Amino acid sequence: MGIYHKQTVEDLLSLEPLLANNPNAPTNFIPPGVVDPSYVPPYQGGVLLIVVVVTMIVVYSVVGLRLWVRKGSVGIRADDWLVLAATVSCTSSPSLHISFFLVL
Image (tube, rainbow, N blue to C red; front, side, top):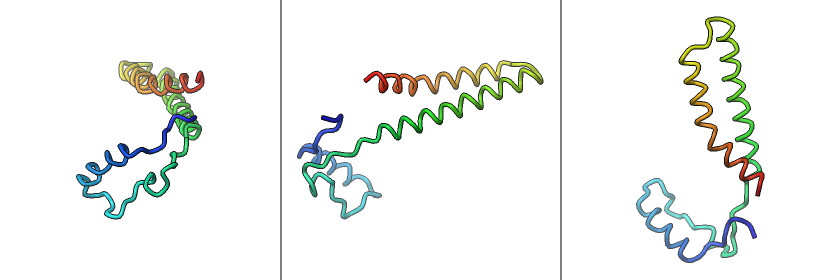
């Protein structure tokens, strides 16, 4: 069994207040569980994993190039260290999620 479950009546009832309070919601919206009660959303974790890994490679490459260029020209300063700290901080959560995904 996957990580998703079949939609229940409680799931469908929980959508009603969200749709009623959202002016952008389509008026003729029918939840997939009404059309097909055995509907289970497709798992797209592999695609998400690829996107996250490629993005992280690009981010670390750009930050590495910045540090390399700055080291050769004016030297690494406080703003460079802040960029590096922000990069590590912002990518630590996706890194942990990827490691848990690969373990499971």
